[in-house]
Length: 415
Image 1 (tube, rainbow, N blue to C red):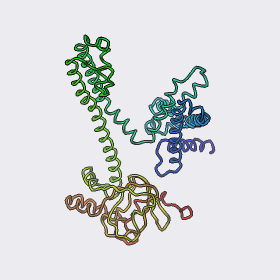
Image 2 (cartoon, helix red, strand yellow):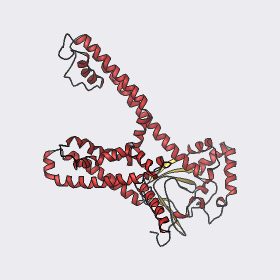
Image 3 (cartoon, rainbow, N blue to C red):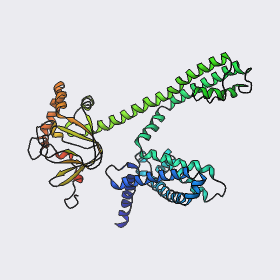
């Protein structure tokens, strides 16, 4: 029995390790503490590498920088080992055998960044030569922040998705530089042979001008050269704006798509809308309005008229129930009955972290249902078939389907 239970405990420990390191752990204080500690170490270690490049600062605070380096390397080494061990729990490698899952993870971009973060220290044990070149590897730790920033991950996804367009833009940009360098070589080589003696030599001027930096160390002196320079500067504005526009547009689309998918999943998960088709859910999403509240803010008050339903886009709320407090987190909802029945709030709902809510007002839903009576009939059929939607005073606007039994804390454990 003990031998059979041991693998199960290891699987649970591995799953918990993966959750703490990779999942984000919304509402999990341990995960938030782990992520906060790792982010702090990344920032401190990168700052130490940058500051110790100054000889005076290094002489004064060298011991502190060394201590930060030792702690960071130890923590990042443990982190890398744990990520490698828990790799079979990663959703990308869940279908692979454990050994292959770990090998696939080790070759991923994020794992290579993790390895680069500790590689300089590992090499210092085996090599005695001057390893200043490994300074860049230590600064690679900065990119570990991408794992904890949805914005950076979105930018990486955009660059990956638009790599072909950006590569094409780079080819065209190089062609412009080459063409302008050749033109300047033709018109200025006799006037300034020291600067425009060849097309490769002229490319330094072309790169400066296309990039609109213009150091001034190389300038045309002939009328034809000035005309070529003017054309180059105008083309530089156009060419540099092209990749910026591509990335900006793709980034906006990525953010919109991510928010759309998250919002869609929340709306479709609500029992009241579970039977609706894609077009109806998309139409209802147009009526959602955003609301942000700080920790401790009262979202709804017991006894007040219920007129809105709330989807939790980020953060956590606590519902004060008779059997004990319940916590709802990202992706959950409350107040669904308020959209159909005239009820009163039966519990206080308070934000326990900074929260972002998506609010659907009953008035807006009723307007939508009047314009789409078929959808209205389907929603009423769902409400009529489910006991928790019946107008009973003790039920109020909070339905049982919204609360998981695991969310309800015991009275002894309630704060």
